[in-house]
Image (tube, rainbow, N blue to C red; front, top):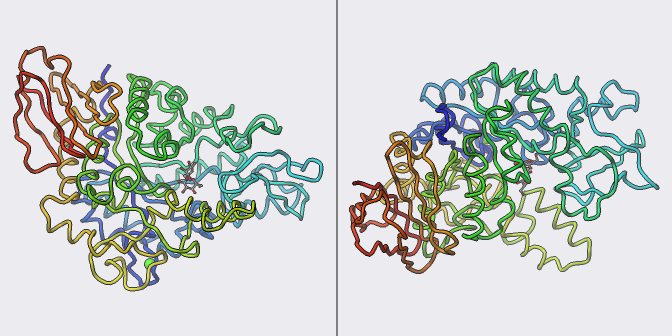
Length: 553
Ligand code: TEU
Ligand code: CA
């Protein structure tokens, strides 16, 4: 069954990690005026929506994901006038703006938490998750994402508070209705300012486990997620906020299986429009074609006729896709284009993370001191604390450090890569002299030029958005071949995720005719014949080759 048309399903989203995008005032930190300055560039890609990472006032222990005032713009990012201008100028260019909201937790410097922790009898005590300790220790053996325990003792009141992430990020208590209403009010405030979309952080964690008891294996933190009550909160949020706006919502849903995921985006359930699941980015450390295809098949099946998904391979939390899932040396350009082709032709909304469109790569700093990522640093301290060899721990944490994707955007080969006039808050990737926007603009075959073509295709070809999806490559470990079909238009996407050539054999004629006539829509190698007709129905794909064909009768 074909999905009902909606503008948000046709989106192509560009994620702007503003602090690493462009610094306009020379303090070494990107800012909202920097995003405004680059709006024409973003528009030139053809994307329809920007996702801006959190910019509310924050002590910045977790780069803005620890909010201390939901109603202000953090000084590093700029002023409220800059935000208003960003909304206006984004809209003036025909694009939409998605804000990233963090409602599972606040900063420990948020006035709500300061009040909550001031006394057991505080009227806001119940806005956070407080528990008594057990036998002189924490209430349970649960972990947090960033620490060995999710509990922190508050000396003042003698109880522990829960933090699913850093100690400085206490979890809000979603069982408290007054608190929830305050959050909905805050969401309406930003939507009334003209925000068109919300990316909702860490949503799977809102509802807490029903009983505070130890788990058998604390390392498997799934117990923090998908607890009873979660869907009631989302339906309430939809009722109080989302349904009153022409907007798009995307939930960050950790540990979503296709079955669980469908519950969030089922159009009959009035919760979210779409979601991010992490079966790839969090749970597939290296490229695994067979596994990836299985994930895509299962999600396509679970969401069919019910809801709409997303496609991404990296964001500000994950190593850059060309480094992690492609080949960032010999086949950097080919594999960057191949991964892009895949993300833009599989069912779901494609997300582009800044710099991906020029094939930016991950980074290897030399010392732990050069890294800023709290997740990595805490893990380093934890492992060393167990007596492990610091050099070995360091090396093991480098490949997946979140800083891999947080290095400054590479605009040109000049000083600081054109990021700003001062030394950036986080070290540049030294390859900026070679890989940068200016260089890509001058090369008609650049990764950047390819992204523009791919995004433009989507505007004119609804088959990419609404087409049915059929994988015809089974469990082939290198080749991914699938068909998208919409009202008589049939596309075949062929991808060779391998460093050698591989041959694909079509098992049956497509379109019922004995000889298949295919017309090339787009390919990532220069010399590809634009038509194809082969009685043997065999096609050879070069290393990291990607082709999109239209079936012509
Ligand atoms: O990430 C939350 C998250 O649940 C993780 O699955 C994430 O993929 C993990 O950090 C990968 O290492 C969100 C934000 O995207 C992240 O930047 C924040 O640190 C976190 O929430 C806390 O707000
Ligand atoms: Ca700045």
